[in-house]
Length: 360
Image (spheres, rainbow, N blue to C red):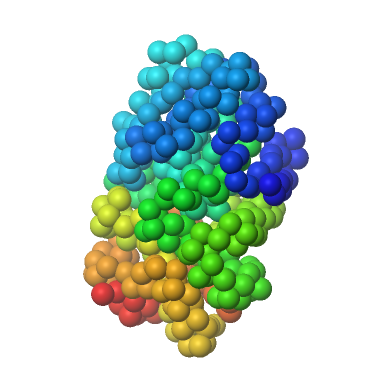
């Protein structure tokens, strides 16, 4: 097991990464405020892992309140969030009850938002079961639900007390979902860790083959990168915005197509290629590096072109992005592999051309 910490002073927390961790209640027990926990999961993950988690906690004399949600990005909304609140209230859960999110990014985001809101805050633990959640959404305290006009537009910053990452769960993950997670792994190499990007070029086949050593190393490296950024800028006032490489374009894809049509990582990969193309048009990134990025996404089984929604529709959707500041959209772009920057000094003609060049 690898352990690293997200350094946030009194609110610091560990990330444990290894195999078989779902069964290890002794890792969870120190983070509980009481002998009661609500486990939020969904109808796909629940049958696979809920019984194992509950059995371990029962041996530690923890009473479990299960909350089973429908599966899919289209259910990341107010109605489903209220389902969590209904169960918590009907079970008379208290502020000291710990909410455990067992699942992928949707479960983690909604579970975290519910924990932030219920009785103005209850303890929260993340047990991510998808690669995307393990390397990104479970770390850093971003919680949210979607709105018809934009993804993750309603939420809160609310840190977990523990992230428990069991890589054995990746063995039951559909190939498409696994590939989607690789988009966020590749992102860390692009924004701030050029050596990691080179390692990914050399080891992407091992990752796709679910080699345990490669997975643990890549997840650890990704989480360390994110933990450093979060520790420096918890509420995204500066450096943390770099983690959104590809997301401005990608969120437009998800919203424009309808939530769930493309997986988040797929949209981020296509969006990152748009950002790379825009960076090239600004003279910041050369064609050779754009080709390297495209080749790695392709080897990871990810799309390198976005859907043809039409440039005006992309621009309209992007206007609702959370990085809009003083009416101007800020872009995360690349001055080289491992060198991301945030800028609003971009000509709309270049943005439009980059979108058009990367859509099919």
